Image (cartoon, rainbow, N blue to C red):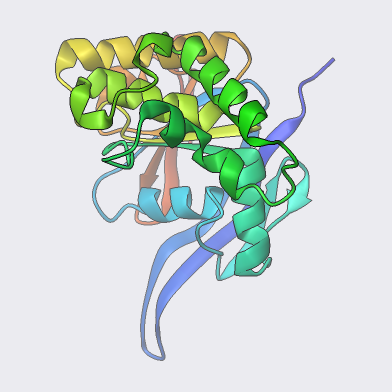
Length: 239
């Protein structure tokens, strides 16, 4: 049985500016990513990768075209509906961790559960789910430590735990190793590969070719278009 499609974009365009001064940050991007895939997105500054990730993360809407997330066309949803989709279906991992500074790891991980409108969980249940998520990344013993009391790698693992706590259909990782030294970055990448091995769907932006090579496919953007799709470790490319 074939896995279902988690991400599908059709002629996706994002235009900035008005009148005669318009810039196409995305110019007709077609992408299909199936459940359980690990895909890297690369491109030089201005290639459109940040715009693409913002749209895939339901942080922005395309000017035209369609974006189907887990079978639902979210292209033209309003901000409130996009926020609900983000909270229920997408887990984010950022380069700068984006943790609340004076808040314990446990409470940082609990935040998506607090903001989930449909969530009927009580405080105890939220704590239990957050602790289980921390256990999954090997940080149960640091649950009551604040970010400044942890290493960069530990902070990123807390961020991954937070991304997992709502059991999302998609994890978006924006330069997850960018603020880490080489060894710690390798550890975080190893953990993401482990999550992929458990069936998680992951889309990751990276500037590092050797990081991208560890994923199943690399999508290279240039001037708002897909330049190349590389199948890593399996040979062959797609123009």
